[in-house]
Amino acid sequence: MQKEVVIIGSGIAGMSCAIYLIRAGIKPLIIEKDVPGGQLHKANSIENYPGFDKISGPDLAFNIYNQVKKLDVEYLFDEVVDIKKEKNIIIKTRKEQIETKYLVIATGRAPRKLNLEHEEELIGKGISYCALCDGNLYKNKDVVVIGGGNSAILDAIYLASICHKVTIIHRRNNLRAETKLTLDLEKYDNVDIIYNNQVTDYIIENGKLAKVKLKDNTTINADGVFIAIGYEPIANMLKLDSDNNYIIVDSKMHTSIDNVYAIGDAIKKDIYQLITASNEGVICAVDIINKTKNL
Ligand code: NAP
Image (tube, rainbow, N blue to C red; front, side):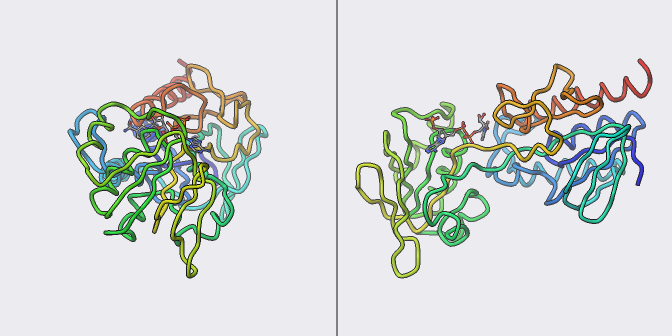
């Protein structure tokens, strides 16, 4: 299959890029291995995206996806397994081989794991990286949230509304999350925060996660543990220049390889927000539009 522009990843960055390209007469192909929306599906409530006082992540993802589909953007739901730069760029998915002139990498990042013993086997059976997806399994139960950033506090707020008790465990003595979120958290009286401590072990009783053990040897009841300690970018198949696996781009979203762009949470930057990801999608689209029109 031959395409002018391929966008890998259908989070807010990839979809914003597609909207601007198609409105300029360039029909991109979006390749997505999961559901459109990316990290939006993990956000219970978004209150800092202009135009919405408050909207759930999945609702915003669905709104943007509908907008993209109405503009007739083509989708391939498949996983990319290889990318090569020859004269053009060759992308192999499980089902197709696609040749494209321009490639936009908008693959985002995945939740960072704590990598403690038993973590892998407990995923879905006590350990989760997504409160919105799995919180309901722990209704009226005791849960632990690990982390002190925006994700951890948003998870704790959501879980406090459905669980019996939420204990946040943070390795420092102050939260990194924004003030509005910490004030929202204070409204719940079933939340405890333990500072300057870290989970060292998951304690399994009767085949189920029952407690976590902390660095100071105390234990906390935990029917579920939600790990919200940041994210890691997803594999860099083209070996683009990167810093800690985050792809390095210039002000127009160019990577170290000609005609390969990167946008959204996959890139090295200061601010990881929906609005910055969307902005990067637009900057990249305009650069591609200008190049195709020889401007
Ligand atoms: P983050 O801001 O990087 O915070 C990660 C938290 O986990 C930090 O408190 C960190 O501790 C802790 N941590 C990291 N590794 C750890 C480990 N091995 N053991 C224990 N604790 C560990 O990550 P995030 O909260 O997922 O947010 C990621 C980005 O997305 C941020 O830029 C954030 O602003 C943005 N975001 C924004 C919103 C919003 O605007 N509403 C919502 C979600 C995310 P230290 O503090 O000690 O480093």
